[in-house]
Image (cartoon, rainbow, N blue to C red; front, side, top):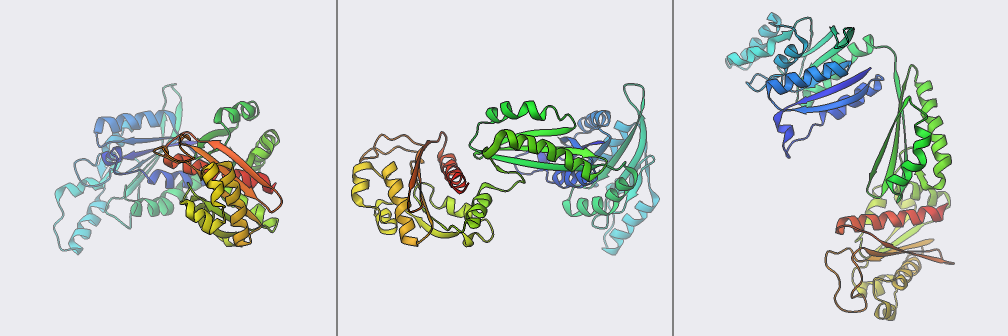
Length: 423
């Protein structure tokens, strides 16, 4: 079975508010073996909401509305759902009574418009909302489709505030779904690769994953890496997991060492783990990245077992003082050079006593350097060096993009250099 989530509220069509409820609902549905095929955000407009509901009922087995159950004129979910379903709304006397009681306990009169929160879809079950005034609704019905056949549809109305929606779904809606749906289980896997074009990954893997028609495959690109996501639904968890593992194994065989993670770990997690396994410690000297590499490493718990520290060496003077770089090297070749990167990596290793010294120096922009030995060097030119006491590797990269992208990709290249070394 597939689901559609309709997030209701004009505020979510502005730059100031986001729909986070759908993420929570998707996780809950996936745990039941239900795949979310569509997510829609609709403003507070009765015709738009009704049309969205009709479309959802035509293509999904489960339709969940979140929001629009309040007492105001722009809370239109009940009316739109009823219109889309072709059913009537009726006032529930128990809900009316509880609303009056709620206001009486606060010693304030109930405004007449609050009574609309007692409007219930014909045939629906009310879901008790212990954290708000608007009850949820659960309707399990049969509708005639465009094909002339009868189709089972489950429609759920939930309030918008997360503090109301989350417990209402967990305690009221989810158990009803679990009891009525056929057993389905979803298994997922994620493969991650660094610094490879998305088109290259797809060209090499598409002939493989296209053979697995029962697995949804998604390719995501960004922040210097490619992610392959696999999702499969089967009658048992074991069957679903075995299927995605089978596909993953074939992709791993094709991509080989290009894959840095087969279970979703970040590249910094992988680097720290592999260096720790080899009982190696790491220190870093960073210029253009300004400590970003160290920040990414120390975001990982227990990173101090491998990463012992380093220095941010923005000025030429600090390159000499903190990493022991000979000033003549900078004078002759420039701070942005393979020679300076080499000296930084070797120097920070000696200064700290680490097994490995890693350095990054480059020009992140936004303006070029006009004087001195680095004059005329292009923005995005980065040198990365890795020293182990016997040999020093130096890598030159040219990153296209703004200052933030240059700095991020420089650290990504550094991590990939470390990872390849640790292999």
